[in-house]
Image (cartoon, rainbow, N blue to C red):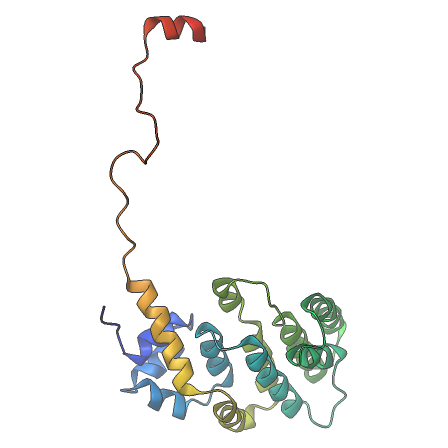
Length: 214
């Protein structure tokens, strides 16, 4: 079955909203859209939806946080999330660290420190091996982490985007989004007709049966 190659439709499949779709519609090919994107959180969201390896995506998110938070003390949750990408920590440990960072962020008055804590918490929540692909993509914690990180360095969004392009393959992202679109447009197989093998035919209800039920 033919799959729509319009970049805006692929971006929509990634769960991105109207702003991203309008941006993508100005490009004839996804390759061009990916190559010119200066919104790092969109790029990570697309990579997640496309099914790229989670440790690779989280590692990129962690690096974006480190770049945005340079010169500051980095939260514990970030270090734990990085250890998960190397297979040294399990997801439960990361989630516990994420909740601690979220609690600290809620009490933090410094906007920059709060954003760094929120970014690190989201990166820790992205450390999940067990969630199914649809749920993981809908939560998009790694994209949220990058969004918080980019808010710390608005003037460096383009640099963060270039870094992501070096680490994540736009070809693989496009391939994954095309597969996602293909599955969404493929009709389900027809339901079998008639009773299944081994099923018993329905019997008429007689007056004697009704008397027993009473």
